[in-house]
Image (tube, helix red, strand yellow):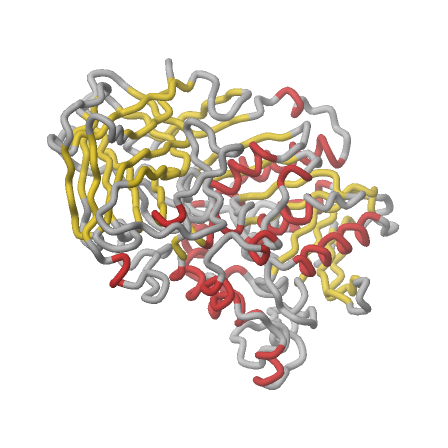
Length: 558
């Protein structure tokens, strides 16, 4: 790379246990000290975006035809990492680090682990004292690279000045791995070989080649036996930890310890992986300067589009360069209000949930299968095959436009013919002609909102539970007595929906995934975690009188 940028490849960053991680450093080709924007992950700093994610690359180029034009050749575009050719000319240093055990960095691959997070801390501190650094380090990246931001920011490295976690979980148990206690196995199992093992340091069978050198992007080849011994088995580990135990706690950010300025970018099309973590990270971080920025679209497109790169730079200009550009006057919450046709308008506020939220209870009536503002006193129930399509409850078509923006929840009185039951909750919208509203999601087409709960995980934390958002402890298993009625509270992930006149809302309750496009990407179908003899019984919902089953929605007032 010539001209305005100096490119240093495989720079060694010393780590306190005696090893060293490898990083690519892109910096301005001129004297001075500049702020650092760092990314740290396992996807290979030398793997070109197109080579690893061809379909996504092609789609992004259709959405953004100038991706490799007007200032960028695209030669250094990497999956979920900022394009150095679009940053370095604006006097930023871009550093991409191969995490321990991945890419060119030797060592034991133990993803999301405390050791990995400590490595990140030391990389930040190394960058903060280099002669070309102004002493301020910002973090930027998507998904895995955002998860690591939440984790390391909780350690408060002295040279860390700001973070932009773009679509990334902050609680490893709740946000991505065990939704409501149910193992989200399909993503983890598929992701492991496709995105983790292929990039493990020493993997001689990797298909990835460095476009500059023609060599494998995983460094010196190791034997298969040594390679296997050099890693933890992520899918097996997540499968055997049923509760939010110390293993999960070690891999979840202590959000209350985060003090650094942050811009949390949440994809409202990301239920199941990239939404809850960004919202909760924003809400629970102790940072005095924090912003929640919501967007829509696919998982990767927004990060690279010019308007979003400009947003990222403006935030970092303020906190890494000290430029008084008015960022501090920005509303702390900006979220997209989604219309059924996919269009959006931005809503700006200074609180989450939004200040004009009116929490509204819609009561379930099992006899009529309706949702009503008044609770029925007539006792009734409805049963369904737990592995079938479940049961629907309908909210009458709206006479005027309604907006639902924020987290939702569902109080149910349930019973099962077995000792446990899994609840999958869907909020669905329909047009006056009964066509379902489907949105473009982060990874696949999606419905309005989703929620999950394993009934044996129904125990609530009274200190963290809010009237509109239950918080389950996931610290013990409380089995059901067959056919006994129990109250349970289901957390439904945040949503954003403008419901035009004549459109209706439907609540679907079932005991299995109900994906739009099959096969779905984020499924819960492991035969061990979801033993059919336990989770394939008959489930019953009870309503009326003392069984006040109701849906709580965030109605946004005009």
